[in-house]
Length: 220
Image (tube, rainbow, N blue to C red):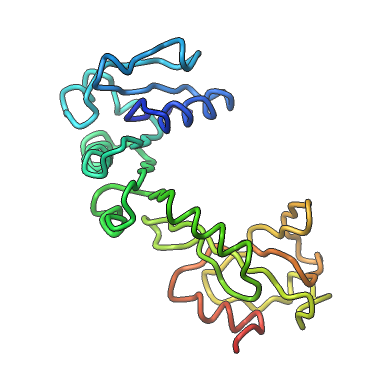
C-alpha cells in the first residue's frame, strides 16, 4: 500500500515507522527543511513540500497514493490536506489527526475525512473501557459511513452466558467483529459461545447503539 503522511513531527514519524515495518511504501511530506532527517526513519521517502499547497501535491503525484494521513499538529492544516486529497486527487482513504477535541465535529466527509483520530478521545475511551462493565464504550468513529467501533464488556453473571453467537439478535446493520476473552482474541464463528467477562467489539451506527444495549439484555 502506498501511503502519504503530511507532517514529519513525532506523530508523523512514528506512524511512518509502523507502516514501513508492515512493508508499506511511505512518503513523508514536510514543509520545514529543518525537520527533514532521512536517517530518523529509514526506508521512508521524504518530500520537502507543503501538503496544503495544491501545486506541491501535484508535483509529488498524490493521485498515485492509496492513503493520505494528515498528521500535522495544526487542525486547520489537517482539514485542508484531507479536502485536497479527496477532492483534487481522489485518494481512496483519508485519515486525519484531531489535535483539539473541540474541532472534532469538523472532521467529517464534508472535509474529505474518512477516519478522524482524536488522541484525547481515544485515551478517554480506553479509560472508560477499562472500568465500564455493561456499558457501551465508543472507541472510534468512521465518519464516511457514520458508523462507530464500540466495545461492550459483559458482566460475569450475564444471562447471555453459553449462548452461541448465531443466536444473538443484533439490530440491523450491527456486526460483532471480535470477542476478547482474557488474552485471546477470537474471530467469532456462529457456534462460538458467549461467556461472562467477554469484551465484545461491534461496528454499529449511532442510532442502533441503544437497541444493541437492549439486545444484550443490559438495559437498566
